Amino acid sequence: MTPARDYFGEVYDVVRLVPRGRVTTYGAIARYLSLRAGARMVGWAMNASHGHDVPAHRVINSRGVLSGKHFFGGPTIMQQLLEDEGIRVVDDRVVDFTTVFWDPSEELGL
Image 1: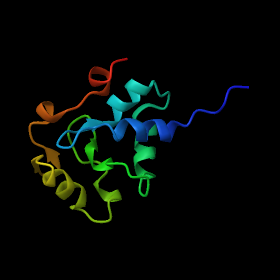
Image 2 (image 1 turned 60 degrees about the vertical axis):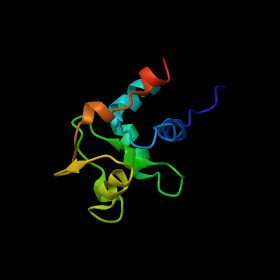
Image 3 (image 1 turned 180 degrees about the vertical axis):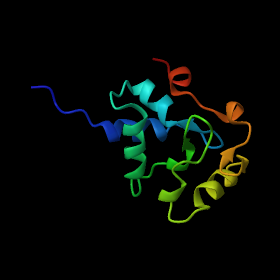
């Protein structure tokens, strides 16, 4: 019997590799890991990541929006964490998103 796949653990492993000052997306992680439930599965993992030493603030949606900000204990905490790493955020959107985007498929290879 094949052991069950630890989807959340795999997501956390990838998110831990996102460099400081860079962001990735739910979809980019899902594509890298070939997750059937896609970006939604990554979102579930990020919602459950508190206490797992995962820089979840570096995972945003494909339009550069801080869509998970409500899971950080306050409406501006995710933005502050990103700004502390040098990422500019205006109106809940990462400025120069394409410049700071980190794609695991390119960076880690498929």
